[in-house]
Length: 356
Image 1 (cartoon, one colour):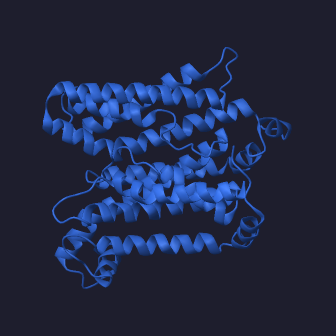
Image 2 (tube, one colour):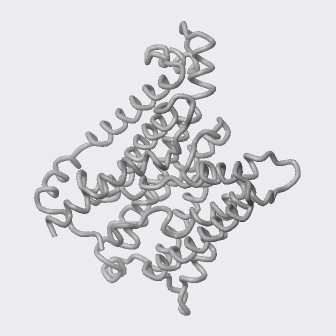
Image 3 (cartoon, rainbow, N blue to C red):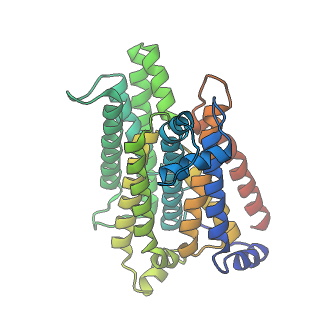
């Protein structure tokens, strides 16, 4: 159950939640982070030159060189923009799931979606499942999405009671069970294949990577993340009601069953779209909503957009570290988010234990 914030945190959240200041600050931080990230890599591009490229692409004449344009706009911009979209989507999904289930440990992969996506991706990478006319990268994406949706259908079928109700506790348990089954299948297939190159590709995918993002996939992620945020924002008052429990939400006129079905399926499909292109990236949807909730309060009208901005910023920097920390080698982005997220989450748990 989501525990109430202590009085000191509540006062600070009340102060920070006044006016548009937090949104403006986080939006400015995200834009600044993206501009800096566009200049970081094997070839360093100064921020001023990055701005010249962006302004030139917007239609104004600048002195940006063709080389800078190729590096910043063609190579790095799809990846940085895709990281922001994926981070925002994961954080929004985590916020919704924590509110619906009233579970502090809820995150976008709680429903077994990442496990199902892994099964789909492994089926393509190791078993060679595919269709004629589709290149390998496209087939992996399609396979991951199909696996994620199949896992979602199985979880909902297992969690639905005879009356058609979808209880949070049953949904979580079904998600964990399906996730474990998918993980076992993935490990078995990789071990039995004996293909070391395939095993390496599977490991890279399951730990997350944005290396395969191009403009078409990035634009898809941006559209999906924006639409999801706008649609879920329309449920912000309903999610506020869920914070007081199902009985209270029902007494306020909320259709508990229909709302839970809609939001669970919606966040699951959002996660499936993200996972299909980025692989499984942990801790973003788990940690970011907690940090934002502690600093700016629990009202979803502000919590959702602030979480989206926070998740986007975190993933932009995580991907920048992943691709630039080691020369000539890329670290899986899931490793970076775990290194950042695990200590923060431990601190949050310690903080709450002191105020409990």
